[in-house]
Image (tube, rainbow, N blue to C red; front, side, top):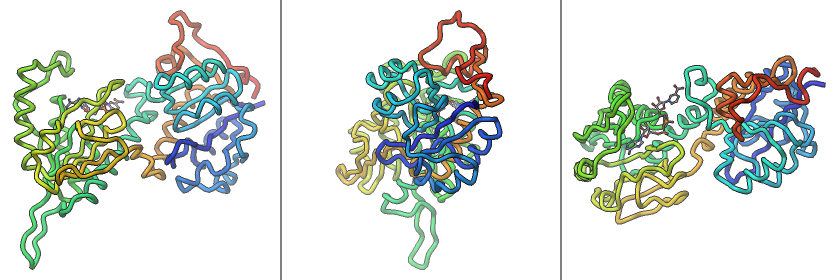
Length: 376
Ligand code: NAD
C-alpha cells in the first residue's frame, strides 16, 4: 500500500491558503503517494475540488483522517483535530508547537512526528522549501498596498493641470524578505522610499531596489556579519535621530523581527505622535507584538491624526499566489522523504534533523522507515 497523504482544509479564522495545489498533488502522485484532499480545502485560494480530482486526488470530508501517514497543512490544526490523526503520522506545516501547550500535548499524545516548517534551516539548499520567505514576500507586498489604501495622498509624483503633487515619503523599517518586497512595491507605486535595518549589508540590497538606506549614524555591525547589541547611549542617539526623521515621513511600513522573540519596539508613542497628521503606520510585525508601541494586532485606528494598522495574516490576503508558493515549498520539503511511494527519513540530512519536532536525540540512528515505508 502506498503512503497516504492528506491535505487538510484549514480551519483557522480568515485563513484562505491551502497546503497543496493540483500541480503539487500531481507531483506527489508521481512520487508514488495516494493523495486525499479534504473537500473545499482549496476554494479560498481558487482551487476547486474538481481540479484536485482531475489531478488524481481523492476527495473526502475529513472523515478518514486517521488513515493518513503524511498530513499537510498551512496553520496548525486545533488539538481536537490532531487527536483524530493516525498515531505516529507525520505532520508538515507552520506548526509552531511551542507556541501553544495544548497543541504540543496533543501532538505528543498522538506521537505525531511534526515538521514545523518555520524551523527549517535557512541554507541555500533549503531556499526552495523556505515558507518564511515565500509568505513574507506576499505579506510585504500587501502591507504596502494597505498603506497606499489608507494614505490620504498619492504615492507617485504627479504633474497635473491642478499643480504638481509631491511623491509620498515611505519608510520601510526592517529590510528582510518582507521589507525588501515592501520597498520594491512602494517603488513600483512611485513613492520616495527609504529602508532601515540594523544589519549593515541591507544597505546594498535596499539601494539595488531603488530605495535609500536610512543611516542614523549608529552602526550595529558586529563580528562575523551579525548585529551587535547597541549601548544605551547609542540607542538614545539612534532613537532621537529617528524621531526627528519621522516628522518628514508620510508612511511607515514596519517589518522588523527577531526570530523566536517578540518584535523589537522601534516606533515609540512619542515618535508616532510627532508625525504629521495624515501619516500612516502599517505594522506587519503586529503578529509578534508590533514594531510600534501603539499597534493593536488586528486593528486599524486613528491616533491623533495618524492612522495605525496592525493587519494579521497578510499572506492569506494573497491566497492564490501564497498557496502556489507554499505548496511548492511543501512539495520540495516532503520530497526529501517521500520516495517510491513510501516515507523514508534520512536523519543525516540536516534539513530533516533540524526541522523535526520533538527534536531527536543526537545519537539517533541514521535512517528509519515509517510503517508505510517499503510497502508501495
Ligand atoms: P526577519 O523577518 O526575522 O526580520 C526582518 C528584518 O528585521 C531583518 O532584516 C532584521 O535584520 C530586521 N531587524 C531586526 N531588528 C531590527 C531593529 N531593531 N531595527 C531594524 N531592523 C531590525 O528576517 P527574514 O526576512 O526572515 O530574513 C532575514 C535574513 O535571513 C536576511 O539576511 C535574509 O537574506 C536571510 N535569509 C536567508 C535565506 C537563505 O539563505 N536561504 C532565506 C531567507 C532569508
